[in-house]
Length: 158
Image 1 (cartoon, rainbow, N blue to C red):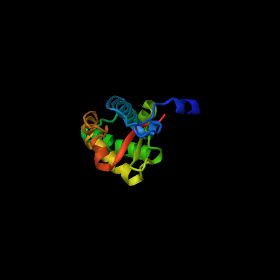
Image 2 (cartoon, helix red, strand yellow):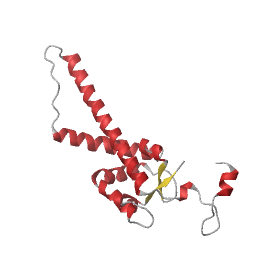
Image 3 (cartoon, rainbow, N blue to C red):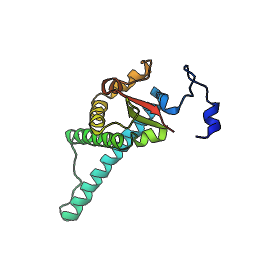
Image 4 (cartoon, rainbow, N blue to C red):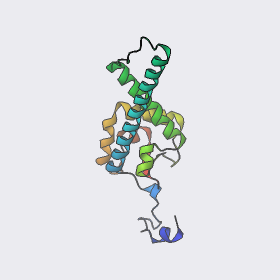
């Protein structure tokens, strides 16, 4: 950010300039990022299905049939892929592709990228309790339930 842009920002209540990393993300930007991430997970699932199809085609050409995936397998795959995807993105950079698109970053209470264990636990929480995101619309500090429990924040990071 240029010096002029930083200088032209309105000061915070204590007199210092407000940085993007100080601004918590709202429900709309977080919701759009979550939708993008669900689409990415679904594309990964479709890619896995096509890998299975190609493998079966290459190994048994004469008796080939498209595999029928049952709902338990699909739900289990979605959960595993979601947790691995979210945890790895948050542990490495604090950002998923959806967060990059919306200019967001997950940070811990010190403002750093979450530790791997925190990222895994937050990913589990977000996967199994996705409705917790809506708490950020009510909370004064725009924290979702996983943010409150794991002591993380989702901030703007452009």
